[in-house]
Image 1 (cartoon, rainbow, N blue to C red):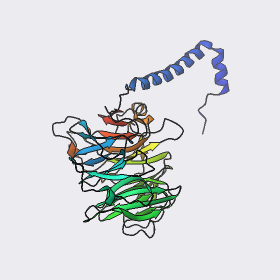
Image 2: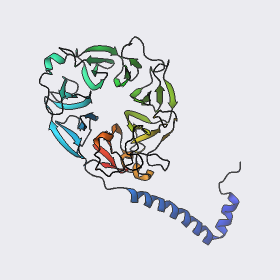
Image 3: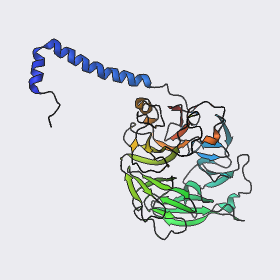
Image 4: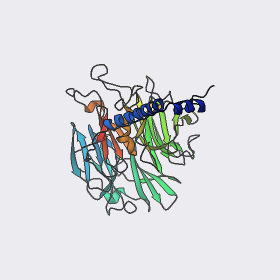
Length: 391
């Protein structure tokens, strides 16, 4: 194969004709500058986020999306295209979880995540006074880092010292519900997912376990640095902080590697439905799986990536692409530079698309908005394909 580089002979000829050389050089520089100026023209003036700083994850209850700022004293909720807020009760905010009936809120009474923690619950109108602090909280010296809901249970992940971790569980349907140690681990609790009658719990390095069988992790999940897990199309998808996407079909023996695009997946994951009020007014099958990313040494190459799903919502393609690329579908405006100059600069720790049933028939938007909790720059949103901080 011949190399396409300009040969030394050609360069010598160009130097013999300085006018021609200058014209060629000017053309090259002009094209480069045009591209730079075009990319700059796509940038939007940044807004001030309503939910600033380091936001919590997001949770849905009764057609509302809830979120807040970590260590803050307000919880915001999105309903009917606007934000409102409620005050926390009993401490500063940790993170959120929902079981569809209640919102569970991790709080720190003394403002210190390494000390006492409370888990309160909210029914969408009032705080539940029956959820008694002294009755429900007994963590045996563990500091609580996160909470999740799945399979009708509330789970809490705790840490004690450098390498002692535990998962606690509570069944809110019990006559006298309380948190008890579910299992001890040597790595953090990183996610939980429900599919059918089964609940799966993921840890960072100890593997993924079935709720009813914690004697051994599912094969090929130990030491995988799993940061998040979700179900789509009847397949479990897990991501790792070393840039690998794994899949598992319930009933199989082991998790398998779907693709290894590199980077660092944060564990933020959500299904994305392609909504078009004319051609696809009520999407029921997701087209993409959105995967949050971060970078330790650079502010670029962050944001999130899109995993293309097949027509049944299964992750069979293994194709991961940057939002805004011309190959459709895409969750962002089909101009990659616009994506990269906005949310692409920020690590995304939680991501969520507004469900179709939260969109009124009167709305004319040709998409379902997406919200993203960034690591340090508040909550951002994507409306009509454009990302900016959510005001």
